[in-house]
Length: 314
Image (cartoon, rainbow, N blue to C red; front, side):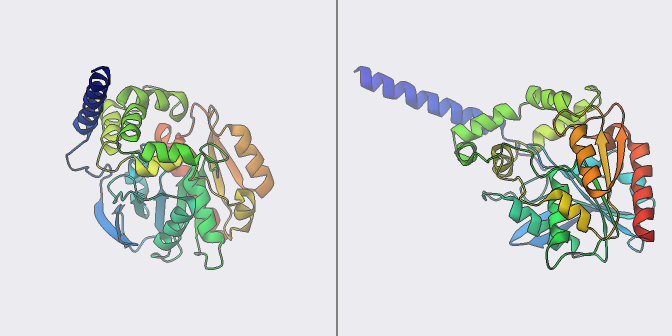
């Protein structure tokens, strides 16, 4: 009788967790967070969503969002329109993120480096603005034997390591699990958690992300299969093997590095060390952490323009 009661309680508990997970899934259509024309890049059987704006005859500028639990092209929302006034701007959602397809793959840095290479190859000598881990992917895509020619490169708090190192494969598999993993991910991406992470290391001003943006981040982490790419990020299996300093030195255009002075995750000391090792231009934004382009959009746009001028004269 005790065993029967125990099994019955366990079944009820499992059912309750499953019901909660299902109830938290966002069933609506995720709209583009950017104002432009929506497109699709077909890659390895996946539809990769992107938004573009500006005159296609102008210089192409590809914006690569950072990789985190709630990553999306919406990271560029504060600068997208202003950049599109002078450039042909294209901002994709990485596979597994945003409005792109999210198959239950074991996402890896190698996969994303291949994606960045192939996406950039669609354009004639594009310039790149890449945030955090995506800067390492872009540097690797340019550095390989079949590297893409760039006309400019700006990295925002670039890093090759944004998760535990060495990677914890068991954690990725736990988060991929259909019941427990989904429940854990729902806790990690609850609105209080999103607000905490934004205030802890995303923004210097915790009031900067609006309630509307927090809601978008919640929705993008609660669509079907939302947890699979972030599971790789959280476990460290999206860390890149690229030697970031060597890759920056090998760029054929002078790179610019942008850093928030108050950054704690990927602190400014990392930026100074990278700049010293590569002779890259380092631009430090006061009162900013990992997202200076959101907190200081006007100055950031000016910095991008200066970077592209330097690339054109290199």
